[in-house]
Image (cartoon, rainbow, N blue to C red; front, side, top):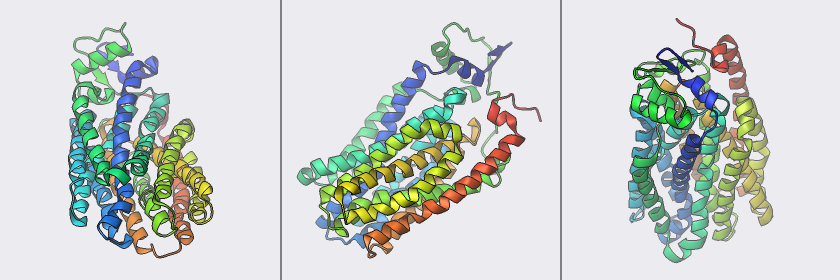
Amino acid sequence: MADGQVVQVSRLLDERGLSSFHIKLIVWSLFIVFIDGYDIGAIAFALPSLIKEWGLSPRDVGPVLSASLFGILFGSAVFGWVGDRYGRKAALISANILFGVFTLAAAYASNLNELTWLRFLAGIGIGGVIPNVIAINAESAPRKLRATLAIIAVGCVPLGGAIPGFLSAALVPTYGWPILFYVGGIVPLVIALLGIFGLPESIKYMALHNDHAGMVKVIGALRPDYVVPANAQFVIEDEKNFAGFNPGHLFRDGLALITPLLWLLFALNLMGYFFLASWTPTLLVTAAKLPPTTGALAGAALQVGGTVGALLLCRWIDQKRFFAIAILFVLAVPVVGSVGYFGVTSQPSLMIAAFFAGFLVLGIQSGINVSGALIYPTSLRANGSGWELGIGRVGSIVGPLLGAVFVALPVQQLYMWAATPFAVGAVLCYIIHRLNQARLKERPWIAEGQQVPAE
C-alpha cells in the first residue's frame, strides 16, 4: 500500500474492499439521483393536465418536452468540467441548487413559452448529476466493484422518474399540475444544503489534488490501523494523469474511434428512451384513448422497470461490459415495439410490456453511463462522461420532437418505429466491444490495474 512516503490509492481501495464509507456514498447518491430522475420525468406527467388546462394540442408540446433535454446537453459538459476542476461534491451541490430553483419556478409558469425556458434552465443543472455521481462512486470503489457500485447509484434514476407518475395519479386531480414542480424544486434544494455538510468527496479526486487532510480522514475510516505519513504523496498508480482538460485527451490511448462511437451510442439510446418516457403517458391517453390514470401508471411502470433492470443486471454488465449491453439492445427491439400493440389491445399486457421496455432500455442506459465513464482515467472521467451524455442528449432532444412530428401515426406503428434506434445501437455496441477488447490487449495495465508504464 505504501512505498516510503508514497501511498498507492488504488491498491489501498482494493485491499480494503467494501466499507461503510461506500454505503454512505451510495445512500447520498440515491437521494441525489432520485430527485434528478424525478425532475427529468415530471414534465411528461404534467402534460396531460397542461394540454387540457391551456387548450393545447399534442403537437404544441414537443418543444417543452425537449427543453430540459437541450439544457442537459450543455449542463453535462459544463458540470463535467466543474467536477474535474473543483470536485465532484462541488459540482453535485451546485447542480442541485440550479435545477431546484428553476423547477420550483416552473410551478408558477403561466404559458408554454415560460415553461419551456424554465425547463431549459433546470436542464442545465440536471445535466451535472449523472457524470459526477458516476465519477464519485467509481473513484472511491475497489477495482472489482467500480462498475457495480456506480450502476447501483445511477440505476435508481428511473425510480425517481416513476415518482411523478404516482404523484400525478394521486395528487394532480386534486392539487393540479404545479404540485409536481413544487416537490421537484424544494427537495433538491434541501439535498444541496444537507450535502454541504454530509456528502463525501471522491477519494481519487482528493488524491489527484493532494488533499492531505481529506485523505487522512478517509484512510482513517477505511484503515484505522494505517498511519498516513505527514508528507505523503498520494498516487493513482494504475491511471494516467492528464493536467488540465483538452478534448483531444478523450481520443488518446486507443480511443480515437471508441469515443465518437460512444457519443453516437448514447444519442441512439437516449433518442429511443426519451421518446418512450416523454410520450408514453400522453400517447396512451390521446391516441389509444386510455384513461389518464392508465397512461400515468404505464409511464411509471416504464421507470420502475428501468430501476429493476439496472440493479439486477449490474453485476453481469460489470463483468461483460459492452458485450452484455449489445445483447440488451437486441432484446429491446421487439419489447419496445410491443408497447404500442398492447396499448390498444390489453391494459394488463401494456403494463408488463412497459415494465420490460424500461427494464431493457434503462438497463442499457445505466450500463453505458458507467462503462463509458470507466473508459477514461480519474483526471478525465467527469469530463468524458459529461461529453458522452452531453452529445448523447442530441438524441434525447430528437426523440420527443420526432414524436411530435409523427404523433398522427397509429400508435402501433409509432412504437415499431421507436424500436429502430435500439436495432442500430446493438450493432454499434458490438463494434465498441471489439474495439475495446483490442485496446485492452495492447494496454494490459488498463484492464489489470498494473503500474502505468513510464513514458
